[in-house]
Length: 213
Image 1 (spheres, rainbow, N blue to C red):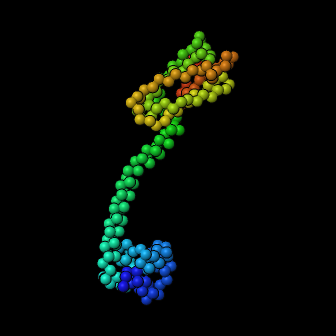
Image 2 (cartoon, rainbow, N blue to C red; image 1 turned 90 degrees about the vertical axis):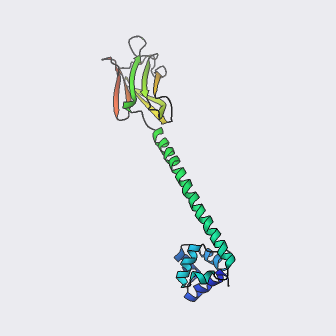
Image 3 (spheres, rainbow, N blue to C red; image 1 turned 60 degrees about the horizontal axis):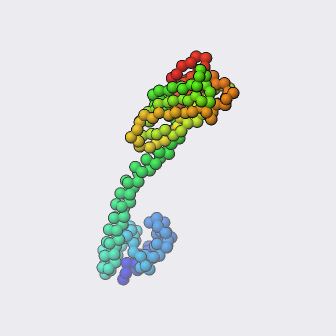
């Protein structure tokens, strides 16, 4: 008698339906059916559980079916190998997932005020105009890079914020030159520029009290 016939007989003797056994083993009913018609074979751990459920010893279930025993042993080894491969892949992917997550998180970050080392204003004459420039030296610590700037204006004030993105780089200090040509109109009178950084607001230049950083 084949293994499938024995576990079917054991199920019937105990009065279980395929659905009930499937629920107990957390498998589908079609899986139970496949085992019982000898289309596929249960893994060894499932055979042990079935033996306990039907009160049949594993020796009785496996007896007279040496070929199936060999297949089960092979399948068990393959299953164990797949488990090790999955663990290895998980170990490899965890750092990648962490890296990608941090990259995404850091890509939208503003520059910290601690990264700003120096700020200078290059005027054209004695006042701000469209030919003036803001020159900033920032330290991106070898992990981050300069990611651009955003300027908003109104009521005689300009607000400047610097962005950064995650990128391993050999350079840490970067000089950033921000022209005001496309920000200030020829007739506009700017009285103050502020640099907005993460956790702090830093005054760059006040026309009534000229001062850099």
